[in-house]
Amino acid sequence: MHIVQKKTTPALRSIVIVLVLLLILATPAFAGGNKEKAEENQGKTEQAVEASQQENQNGDQARTAENSNKKRSTLAVASGGAVASVNGEVITEDAFNAQIENLRKSYRAQRGSDIPAQELDKLKKQVVQAMITKNVLLQNFRELGFSVDPDRVDREIQNVKNNYGSDAEFEKSMADQGYDMERLRKEITQSLQVFMVQQHVVEDVEVTDEEMRRAYNSNVDQIAQPETVRARHILVSLEEGATEEDKAAAREKIEAIQDELAAGADFAELAKEKSEGPSSKNGGDLGYFSADKMVPSFSDAAFALQPGEVSGIVETRFGYHIIKLEDRKDAWLPSFEEVKEHLRPQLEQQKAQMVFQEYVQQLQGKAEIEILRPDLKPEQQ
Image (cartoon, rainbow, N blue to C red):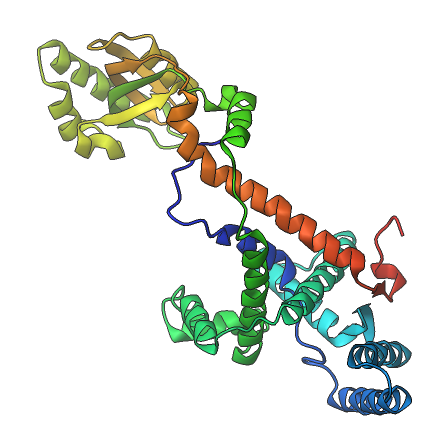
């Protein structure tokens, strides 16, 4: 268990960031699709809704809406316009295909080639599952009666723009990934809707002292702090692929520095003047580090020294070093009380993630979900 710094807020936005990357994948219904087909489907849907309302005019409103959704799903399937349905709300072929094409564009832009066929088949199944989960959560958002402030959407869009050097770079990136502002706004809105559901679900999540103590006892090996040393070094660097002539010149240079140290030169001042590493400005000071943080030959030499001792010439892939040990700290195990408040935010995040995952699974278990294309169904089905 990695001990993290105490968070100043219980909000667990990082969970939702991960979930949004997974879940907010679909374009809106009929987005980018054939307009005539969309209008035809819409017309049939309206007829179905009207017929359903006439047939159930003495029924309650919830039953009417449910029957309308089922008819809408049936009509979409009959027209070949859906890959899945969630409680009667369809995920259209157009939305699914647009998402797959956008992912292929992104892959080609990064890799210079298309997604291999076998990976693409797996990706398609993952995408339809993600779109289903997203629709389940968005339906739940509506059931909870929540709403998203348009000003907040504007701020999130601006945050996205701020990641780019200019409007031109932002617009090019949008175009490369198949986005326009309308789609970006809708997907950011959906992202915030999922976030609000998540906040609602985990807002009361707390971690007790007993839970923290169990975590502490179960992760002593990871909580324990290893032996560390603080050292300075002087480096004469070597480029990768250096010739024997280059090595000989560097060796001669580090030996001359070694002679200066033997004559009484101050290590830190000499490091500032002659070390070729980034630590030179700090007099070669590397701070405290454990053995696994440095390349083995450097660590072996540093940990063999006592405070105040200077090593001989040490060779690594970076070049030739002379090391001075400044201090050593023995391995130690922080007490529970010392780490309790550092453990809390991490355990809260883990617990909240589990709670939210269970919530999503419960929503999916109650939902009427159909995957309508056999090639998109999970292997076990």
